[in-house]
Image 1: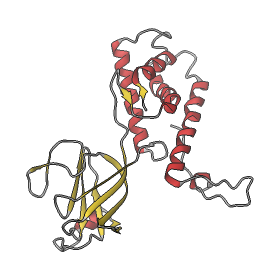
Image 2 (image 1 turned 45 degrees about the vertical axis):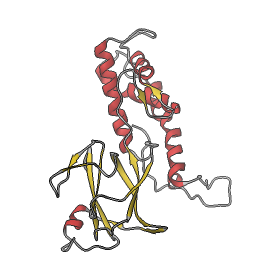
Image 3 (image 1 turned 135 degrees about the vertical axis):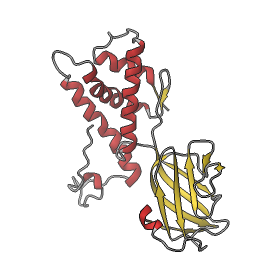
Image 4 (image 1 turned 90 degrees about the vertical axis):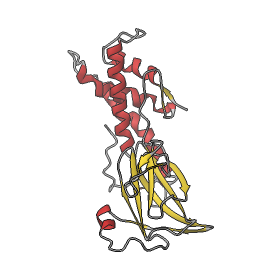
Length: 252
């Protein structure tokens, strides 16, 4: 399922006074709306409580001490200085879990910083990896393993891919339930480009904030399982999203 870009663009431009309802946008207004929309999608990509995407894949890496991720068909390997095919054709913004699998046995190395990885003195030992570090770049990133992996050892990743950027007449890779959130949050973003005498529409601004609540609730359930509320029950609340310790601001 997806959301048509043109539907969002025309609603945003109508709300913000660029066009009248049903009027075709001028090319420059269309381009502006698409840029604003992609900026919004970029922000949502980085926010765990909004981005609904999840990805998992497993591969036997071509190099024992590193796993290469990229959306490019071929990349320059920093060690051999040759062009290679990435192990994963993905541009992840977060990696939630890395496991090493040998048959039915699953190992869970510990994540460390890049600085900690490069501080390891002997990196040529071969064994089951105990730690991993992610040099997080875009569109190509590298996961470094230590000790370097044994032959035949699969590396499985579970992570959060970016919400893809879009183009005019394209599709936004989100569930249609995100339509209002896209329209009203994009309206708030585009408003400074065409401010109105009466100021920003406060009702639209409230919708922009409230429309995110359903999206964040779906993501919370996906990540944490069904929510157990402390209200109307003898059980204590079990969800971080209901906890007073949760300081996440769900508005833009």
